[in-house]
Length: 348
Image (cartoon, rainbow, N blue to C red; front, side, top):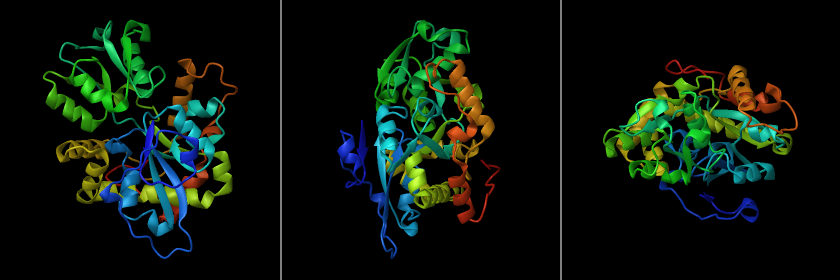
């Protein structure tokens, strides 16, 4: 389900399907540290999309190493799959953590919001003019089938036309199969990140963006890193320093396009044109967090939305903002960087 970029931690004993690999851009020279503290940093999809590349930037530019952190980047095949839950539960990993997982009993909390708002577009072929036209068509459920992010967002697009998930056929796909599956005509509706939207519009005549997810769901909280409560209690300093490295990476992303684009190309295996298109879209939309990324309004809107949609039916308890988010980790990380900043109008 996922692959490791650096081997040698206990996660290999817990989860199967790990394949060693490497990226030249991730090379770094550690400073003089008594010990290098190890942590696994999970990425929601494999290979990553441009929005997920903050950890790669932090690693390539030495932001982990200068804090004596040996960060192990782990790529998962789908942001809501059970392997992410298992990895977080083990207590050595930070990774994408949803309110749904917490409500269903995972003893964990979100500690930093990588991307406060969704960056993707819902892309369709030429004959689909409105969401209502999706009725009877095949839509992508990449990254886990029913309940996956693609399935959830496809359902939202259908709802905008007063349709339900039963009015279309959802097709389970590997996350890497979203773009080629759409171009080949296997599905007629798919959630695509900006770099893949760029490629889809280039490769499939008439393909177009039906709606941007940030317009469809303006208060939806997209991607937050979380850690187990045991990990937070055991080593808050390591988590604080890790989040500080990630925030420093995001701030560099906004400030130095020329420095980060090659790292993003190496991590995503996408062309310079596609990556730069995504970079421009993401920075213009303030998708990456320059501070904590958290907003109680956005977090609780997303939770209430999940409740209303029935995604939390049977969950053992109702949640508050403090049940979902540990604010101290990101607050201390921001303080270590000199305080909050605003970059080009982006301040989350």
